Length: 452
Ligand SMILES: [Zn+2]
Image 1 (cartoon, helix red, strand yellow):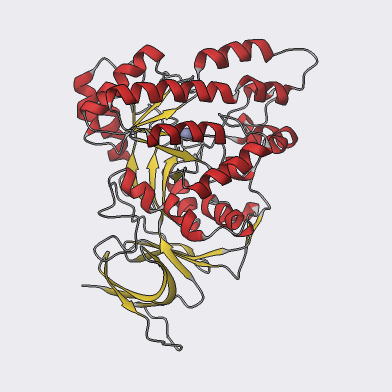
Image 2: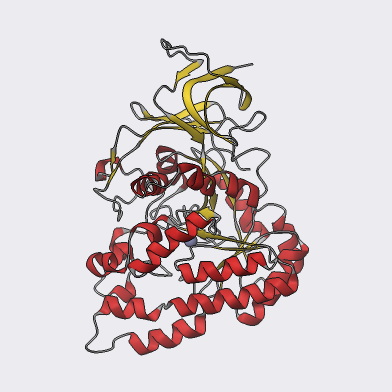
């Protein structure tokens, strides 16, 4: 039996922030004990002094593309999970595409699982992919559904050859399959026909700024249309839906309405939609290219308003890396779309929330308990509560972090967050009772992450 104490911290619990000590036995939280003031604590192997720190549950990032196996030059689970750990994330859900092959059949799922063994610094789960090419293979989908955290499908081109988008007709089948196997279906919701049409109109159009043309080709109305269509189908089929990376407050409003009317639906947004806007994209180009694209400032403000109303359920990084050369293309249309941010998800978001004087109690669940509860891992993750995994992040609000290039732990050293300063610092990340990152000594060598 191994014992660990985290003492003197301000701990985020179900009752809000409390001055308590946490006792950990082996990998689990054993008890929360009222803090008797112990001003002079000597740190030992079994005692961590969290004086001056917030102690919050390890973050769960339900949306990363770590590209392993097959595209390790873009990222890889080792570098990706290292960056996650530095940013306070203790669990990631890896998407079924951008690794090669994509996770669209049972064999690829098993192969990926086996390949990733002992390679991750943080705990992980795997998404399964539904595409137009595997939808009719019900037996295979059912087999896969037992080994995945949830399903992911695209309603528009994914940019990955072996991950075809699901047509409007196919989506009905996807909804039924997810429902029958009792799994959540997550959607990249942009309406392909509209994007296709707008892209044909704007691409290579003379006299219009190329970056502006790209923004115009991926309209909010394409997002709205896809979301409305999917909500309607989910209501009819009783499917549990999760919309990833929603970029517009108007669309969040639509989802909220459906939620109120009884549709089983949740919504994710990403830090880049809450921090950057289309002006940043027009200025910086491909490094901020993503789909859906960055939106006008009023949408960014609208999303913060939605957050405060409690209309957004989860925050995911959508860490989607590539080689720098794939960003440094002559034309914006050819550049790879995706933002590298997993290391800064919570630093950037909490920094922004603090500047906006938003109570952290409102924000933290979006990366912890909300994710755990939605994806069925709340018996292990998401809260600081006896019986759960001892996953914590120690954060100081009186120190800062600069996102300098040397600090990037992801494989390709570029990010739109480069040189940004966050008015907080991750001091330690603890995974199942073991310190895996310390701001003085870095990430430990052992890779302790396991597949959930
Ligand atoms: Zn993604």
